[in-house]
Image (cartoon, rainbow, N blue to C red; front, side, top):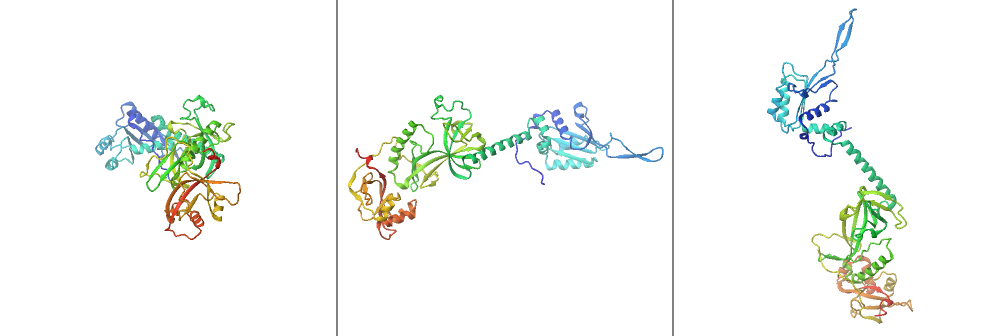
Amino acid sequence: MPKQKITRTYGPIHFEDLDPHRFEDMIRELIYDFKDWQSIEATGRSGNDEGFDIRAYEKAEIITTSENENNIEEEQVHPMEGNLWMIQGKREKEIGPKKISSILSDINPEIPPYGYILAASANFSKDSYDIFREELRKKGVMEFYLWGKAELEDMLHLPKNDRILFTFFGISLVSKRRTRATEIRSTVSVKNKLFRTVGEGRQFHQSILVRDLKDTHYPYRVEYKDFETKPRWREYIAFDHHPLGLMCHSHEYFAYVDTEKKEWDFTKEIDLVNRQIEDQEDRQIAHKKRTSVNDFWDFLPRKNKGYSAIDCIIKYSDIAIVDEKGDVYYNFPHLYVDFFGDMGPFAGSWNTIKINNKGIKLTKEYKRISIFPKKFEKEKFKKIYKDKKILLNAESQKQFKDYKLDTLYETDGKYSFLKPKDVILIDNPQSETEQDYIQITHIFKSKIKNHVEDSADSWNTKNSIQKQLGRELDEDEEINVYEFRRVHEWQFEDK
């Protein structure tokens, strides 16, 4: 099994925060399991250490023999004998080669220790390591180690030394790992519960109520004067899973986009996200607003009609509780999240402009212009033709009946009397009583190939043109295009 490496750092350890004696104490604790010691003596604490902070003896491994009265050799162990080690601690930021030589001058070459350790809170250079080895070999030291700042940090990061790290610096990596493991376990549990509750995989549609963990007044909105601008609970539509959390539809608005001119606009007058729970008054207000905005939006060129969608993500790790059942007011899952700042429960959000179910990225080239008015009014009908009808052939009539026809085409000017907002009947030979009215929303000219390329469904568009014209198409031929919407007679009866 390969040796485990530390891949995450928690910042440098501040050895300079320790006084010299505490630094020596730390070194003494670090060497406890370095060898099988007979004894360790903190000589530096006495003030008369002869240049050494710590003196230690390894357990004796030399076994001597002696003869007993019967001249039989017996093995005798001298437990207090063993290899002498001298350990020196230096809490200094810089120790160069000259300083190394000065420190090692305290070693008596006539009676050198068996082993020697110099531990310091400094980073040593290659020259320092070389001098250290050379000097100790000359003095007859058999084992020697030079521990610098990097080596000491590595030792303190080992799980077995976590107690020492905490004692001297108040840091516990083991407790951090345990806390992190608990966080991960909780996050995985929330994610798996949401998979069961709102759906697995992708592209689902599930209402959820996101509630502020700090709220104590649910379900009484009147307790918060700023509830409209800063709701403590709100219904959102969960639609997808991200590796980090649950993705939700937050808002959707009518928009205008011109991909050729790189222009766009949208209106916040009405939020199009379809929420399950709305009181009757809110629903009526929303319906009235939607009708007025829709009346304006319908008369935009179809290729420029889009939606501005704002989607958000709630991180699994931020969800404290998942209530799968909800309650009698909101009978769907409740998610409890600690709301913060303007983002509330969300860790992030992004805006997407959609036209014909295709997303458009608003690059820096796009400029927002003023298309939508500040105040919307119901669009009025212009001329209403009740004595004229649009005559469609059988194939086009079937398309209209099946709600697959929303554009008229001609090349001979037979519909040239029509203007935007005019209303006219579609001939319906299969019904004697039903009246099918359409209102013209936009008129323009285009080459057939350009119009087909710009449409959302090129095959059906080309097929519809061919059926209405009743002949093979010349793609370079110019065609008159009349976009329309369906209307009902009751809408303009009192005009």
